[in-house]
Picture 1 (cartoon, rainbow, N blue to C red):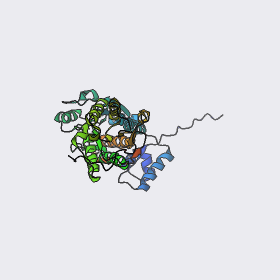
Picture 2: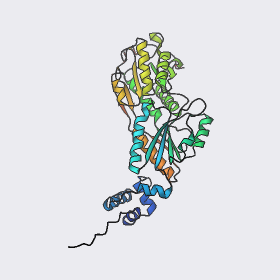
Picture 3: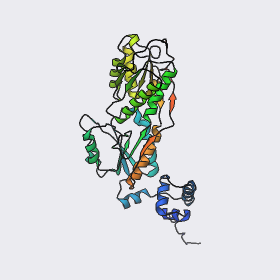
Picture 4: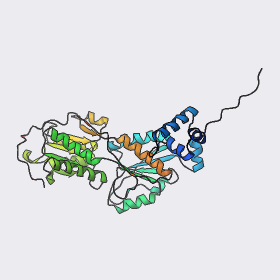
Length: 356
């Protein structure tokens, strides 16, 4: 009887992968973390193939101990009620699972003076943070970010002070709302904006104004109101725009967020206005909730999951010593047409108010 014991097979290391693929150690490390920018496609494919053939699996626990890392990142959002964060979070979680990181989620209320979250709460718990509140021109918010003292990537904040940031093409997204409504014959289009203290809403406002200008459509001040990205804000803004005579109000509303659109629908019902017979409504942010409203809402489906992927990848690179970048995710974008938008029933030759 052979009592000899077989020698356990040694677990392949990153150095083994690099040697077999003919690249240096740092290149193998970056490519296996999907940081492929600047590398030839055949090099990327070779490293990935060799890793699979050798059965290489990163030892995240050993790496964390070696680098004194927590293997965790935080996502800081201003409002957990905002449907726009759902798919972004899924995208971030995808990357965390791939890379062996834990994701911590925290709501940070960025009020009139400063966020309510104490940066010290994250000390020693995470290696970096994705920050999704986009308030601009608030020095106390800037001071809070400085106190955070972590590798940071801004999400949906493309302001000049955001050195590492990933944002959506908000000008284009708002323009799609206008184009859809104008394509249905609407020339009186109102805008329930997001909070105009934020970078996101300012870019959507610019996109709305630009699209209306290209089409030669008026933008009376009374037809635009700040909805604050909240239900209450969308409700109040809609009442402000629509509580007037029929010939003085829009036939369609472009709403900057799904949660504000819910408030918009409630306000229209209170005013006795039917959607879409009296007024069409379109909004940005696709979510299962949009199909459950009465009537179901037409939405602009933006690449939120892709945004989450790119932001998480960038943060992990910054944690490794990278400098980050300013990235705009410009697609794919899709209009999900539902029952809240319909052709305009008002005479298109009707005289319109002045633009301003």
